[in-house]
Length: 336
Figure: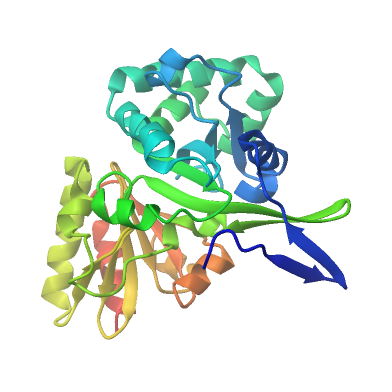
């Protein structure tokens, strides 16, 4: 669809017209002004440009830093960049995001940012209180350090689709395909009232797949998911894979952009391999998973995410091979 076509929404006999953004700051203000609605009540969004200098991130600054703490034991960290689709992609957006990739590969720059983030939170009483209310009794500096080092995400927020992005994601699978999450933020106005939309919604970002279920068209591989992963998590993955191949005759591993799906007539689990943890989405009700998993963190998933996976499910977070047998036993059970 032509990105210049204007959209209207109709609610209670009112016509809401899509807002056209001429200034990037207006889209940024929309994000900051509705942060809790957009990212969830258990999120912390820190405006970056007013808080740090250019040297901290190697010569470039994102618009914001985002801590997603809906599961405090499994936090996510994002560099947030807000851009208008009218901006030149290769001359501006591509260069900006590429600098963020370099940051994630530079331990010195990460260390500087961790120290700066801690200083920002420590000296802001409101921010510190909110942070502590979400993470409990965790030591704040260590919590920030562990989160930033183990969670590498770039959230790119646009006002409209950009035609260059699908090809870029397929071409640069190890960076744009793995690290960048894309969402569209829009506002629809009727006099003094407005409706805001986010597509896909934040909770569903890591469930969205743009690659067809076709091996010839799929650029993602098992090696792609294991690149940069710690030896401990590679060992966990290997143990699970070996056991499942031995116990499930027709099991199939299907690598996609954000996960590897496990299939035996149907998809029964999805493996999201991170640097120092393995996130497993198991297709079973959460309470039944909790009855079977006693030694690993079990987390709930939003209704929209469960709908994407086509049924009741919950996540299991594995950080080492200790008690991995209970996870394997569950996976064997639910594939039947």
